[in-house]
Length: 196
Image 1 (tube, rainbow, N blue to C red):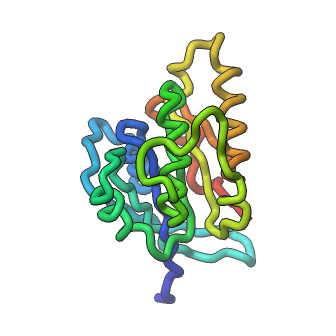
Image 2 (image 1 turned 90 degrees about the vertical axis):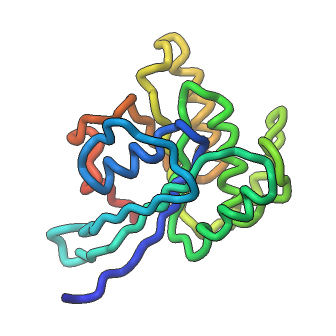
């Protein structure tokens, strides 16, 4: 058997936003019935045939690193997580669309993972101040996933989507918003995710 190329993808975001459920669905093709809190990091894997059935087909061994979402400001929490951040090929930023703070904290998560965090505590965005230059030359692809879309009242959905669109633009990231449980595999099919 030929060796497979290894891809390491971090899955980052606050506690309770749905990171573990997302990773389990992507890797096990089933909904995680009763997710528990991730302590430290949990790694799940999936073998993925990129561009399956074409001459460009290539098989990858994808490791999804679900990093525990404790937001503690202590430097010991950050330094402990730093061991997971080396040799990264991509980052999935997960936030709860019903929790604005989880969206704002994506800045801190991404800067911490990219080792560009000059602000060791709390949210680094205040009153819209944000230095886009920190992401201008970022070589690591970012995907931003918002969860619990169906839990947003219909009259507030446009405002939330507008806010998250600006957020994904700040990160120069693709954006996907999912319903609670994201149980419909036909609507969210890992095989159909092809990013060139």
